[in-house]
Length: 287
Image (cartoon, rainbow, N blue to C red; front, side):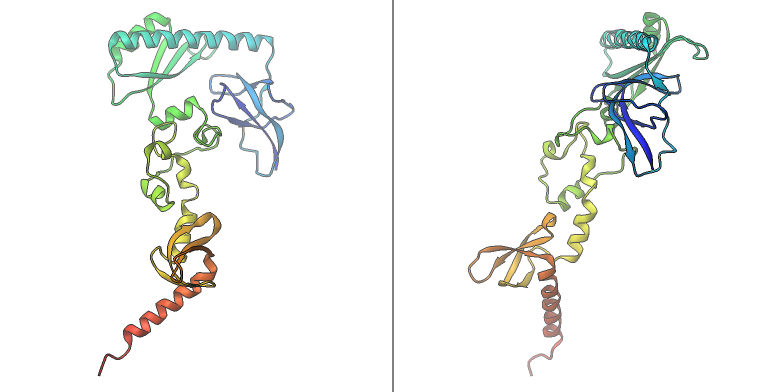
């Protein structure tokens, strides 16, 4: 058990969780976050609070940002903006099918090896950008690296709001991209409209995987759609599943009406029917 706070380097960007250590950052405070290239300024978006999990593996806040840190951060953001504009112009000039997603810049400081700009981009296929790198280096007067991102990594880097109204999962808590298939949407009776089941990256939404095991377990134990069951209201046929309610929808033989029955109330009847059918099928034939 320990304390954690959440920070972000950009509005609606990915959240990073840190141990506040001896500091007590509040929402809106600018704090220093340890990185491979030295401390960087980020904004606290979730004030430090107690959490139940072990926090020993989380990095610690390096301190609250001072005036010098804020000036350095402002210069860093200016350099990133300049690099982004230059990259877009040169990409257009080279007629390359690339889209700039994000830019990182490291200022010239001891041990950094000089200023360095990293440009992240997406493209429909592999791109030969060697001449582009040379022109960018000459324009920006620093070492330049280009890194191609997948559609999902692009969404993770940029951040944003999902169709659910919450921050993107990949930009907040997901650490790995597990496979998501169209079968998961079918098993959950979701509409197969790509606009409804695709995320900000254009791929199937990661959240399709979250509840999928629950639907699989329900399907294994509940009467299948189309099977006959006996309910407290009488005999009928299963026409739908309602997994969130742990129930099935049955069309009654008596009047064609539909009623919702709990899974427990029809599972025993299903077994009885299967047993009865098996008995009838194994019985002696006509003499």
